[in-house]
Image 1 (cartoon, rainbow, N blue to C red):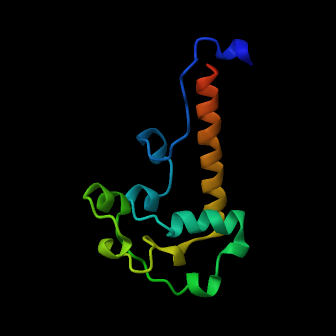
Image 2: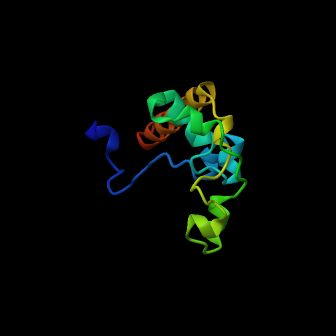
Image 3: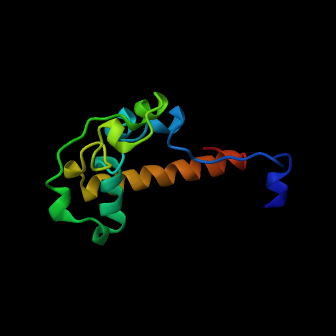
Length: 123
């Protein structure tokens, strides 16, 4: 492994879903910025650890179309000030296990792609 990494000392590669390279491959909700405990994140949790999702509550939550990323960029720093009284944005009621499985697969592909790129292997 060290031979493969020669010349990469001090360099870091990571799969950040916030970079354009990766963000465009994720869900519409993620790209909108309205994705704090919304459909995007809730779908992932439903696929990975469904026991952590309170289905009775999830299905009653109205969509909150607030872009967390835009609010943070504008200097708004509390959920209440952002219009997220219950500390979520997006549409958790629309989350599905199937979407979560697809998103987990895409996130895994991001990590593999970054590792392969860091090792100088074809992506």
